[in-house]
Length: 449
Ligand SMILES: Cc1ncc(COP(=O)(O)O)c(C=O)c1O
Image (cartoon, rainbow, N blue to C red; front, side, top):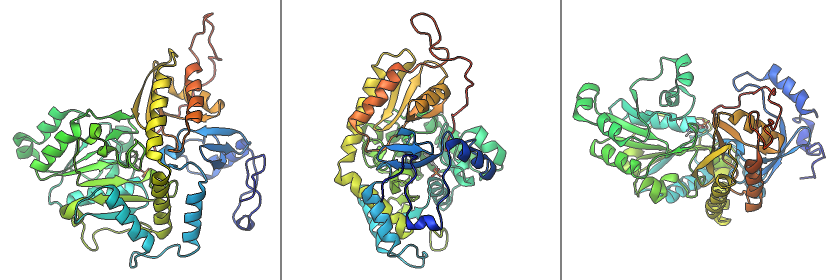
């Protein structure tokens, strides 16, 4: 690749003859966005034109440290040479085939995921393009148990397609689209007694046997909320005793994000359990869209028979090559260790920096939430952007950090420095004067993917 221009736009390449948009400023692109792109996300915070490692640049040439990584996606950062080369090589060799055919990258990726999952004999993988599709497939698997009662957790987020939405508890996401697929019951978050009640003889007599329990090991969109140690062990015990599937949604927590390949593999999270189904997406392709359903053991792996589920793009050889390269780099470069080290640094130093606006930091590895003392996350996210940091106001009073797994300790120190000093409207300095202009309008940035 040639060096980018100062505006952040890459210099001419052959593809630009047919595909590249003209230059423009952030303001110009934002205006064009609002006239051309459906308004489901609100106006873009910035228009970004390139990235490298943990940094991205906007159309005005301003650089940002990317602490969101496309919402827990860009595991290797931006424009990673190994990932770029793997995608280019596969696209230049065989870009797509239908699922009437297999490809070596697809088969090798399935084997790799089964190995990383330490999945038992008879386990199998189904490929998708996104997290919601992975959960959609898992939901369809639950229906093949012959039961229709599915438990999900309050606060859980599993995607926006109708099945995954039925598993998602937030009323504002669900209600405009009802009726959703039926049979889903929400149980209180992290409450073993509530789970036991859902499996009790009275509940079964009234509402039927449970087909499956669907859980995120750490709830991401709900504000990075972890389950207590022991919850998943209890969940595994109850589901096993009742012949129900335990489905772990690791779309956000999987692929190294929390410091292990899958979050449930950490003893403090999973306590050594083996789930029936794990869903993946986000970080799996390092930025290339790919998702997967891992079905553990023969029973789960054969719930969907021939013709019962399908996808044109799922298992695409380019997506599989991207995932193989992403997993390969995570292993080769020791990124799981990096996630644990840099995650601990961020957690401890942000919490210990002494800013009264910061009430604490929670999460695992590089999936963290900075708990604020007041509901000013939108203001903090905007101040971060102005200071050259991309963060996410995941709740009115919490900032989510989900940076690339390649974030360095030096870059983490810049993040700590920001949280040590950030002031927003309403913050008082020693003289009692507001630190920034209190009339600045608050644009809400709290939004889930
Ligand atoms: C836990 C979880 N499951 C599913 C999804 C949906 O994934 P996607 O946006 O790729 O459809 C998300 C997205 O945020 C998620 O965090």
